[in-house]
Image (cartoon, rainbow, N blue to C red):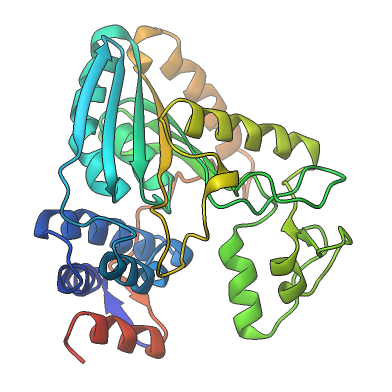
Length: 327
């Protein structure tokens, strides 16, 4: 399996996106997110999505040449209409406005509406934290998760991300996880590899627990932690759809399908200036010291800086080169 530099991954991804109709600046923003995902080992949100992006650019399911529209209806409320384009450039256009609002008022919200899937939610909260602010993010997705005790798909994997700044332009703590027991991509990857999945990840079409990824894909995923994860998933759903103008998960078609209606998803962020509390740094330091004193323990995300290269399966890399017109 070849190791490819993150710089080349970004370059090839940008070229592929432009080959399929994305404007240069849009392609650059999306490619940067792909590179970051590969650098941190988040392969499901990296090159794994590139072919889908290109197919959907060609079919018109995602718009690659639109200019997002940023507005500020209230002092601490920032909105951006992605206009059925990618989430990454929409966020890039609005981030500075939202950060300024949070610094002025202590807290602010950023609602990204009418967007394509954002894939890695932590990619966005991380940027806010590097600006010196605490960030909490929510989004939703294709319906795949059933309520506890049920079998009908009602909400998506609906991730939540949380990033804390270290005060020096870095990340002190970060987590980004789906509120389902597992990300859908891990089920599809298990099916492709011909391996089973653990019990507790999914149910089949009849609502029975299953270890068969194919049966899981015909059934539904389960929430992480049962009713607790279900509650967090519903919270993400209401904020991501209700506060952004995006669709409910129930109305979103499969994210990787080459054709179909735009995703029309929303992402909702809460930005908090830790400087509004004189106790925040001390309380965080106390917590961090206690965890560091426990051998083998660490704060989530505290040491994930990213690699300069990533292992990419040869068939996937050949696909990337082909999409970029370089094969």
